Amino acid sequence: MTREVVHRPLQSEVPPRMSYDAWLAWSEREGSLTEWVDGEAIVVEMPSELHQTLVLFLARLVADFLDLHPTGRVFIAPMPMRLPSRPSGREPDILFVRADHLDRFVDGYLDGPADLVVEIVSDGCIGRDTRDKRVEYATAVVPESWIIDPRPHRRRATFLQLDADGVYQEVACGADGRFRSTVVPSFWLDPTWFWQEPLPNLVDLRAAIAAGG
Image (cartoon, rainbow, N blue to C red; front, side, top):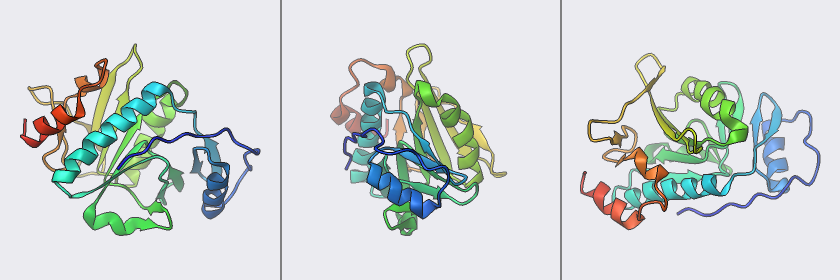
């Protein structure tokens, strides 16, 4: 299940430094989307309409597939993911957690890496989403990461999977133009769906994916 998230402006100044637990309590009280990195809270840019539309579209697409193939659960932000390798508390736009890793959820956050994270790029977080988090997610052993850049002059989908050395390798789409996930078995998508106006009908896509394409 997905839900639309509305973030209010911060009601107080961002504290200079705080513990992870203090950040969780502060962020919940403020009601705005922030991340925690090296002991500091980082305010995340308010998502645009396009950003929210794509998050909901893609999350629903994966969630619909999981209704037929219940191999895990999908979540959208806010859902803190604590990565001790930096340390950091990130808020990926979408997370998928396999059924055998659901025990990583502790007190309302994911204590450890998700199996798949998705970041939708916005103008105010280009470096963070395409560079900083890529390094963090690989170090924390997030097996698969998708970076969707919907900006009109860019429109690029990057699919990353960890190799045997723990390094992200960009995975090209097949000859049919489709990307096939290794983390969500049998799930595939066509990146051109993201750029269509209006977006494709989810019922039709669900049937196509279920049929195996």
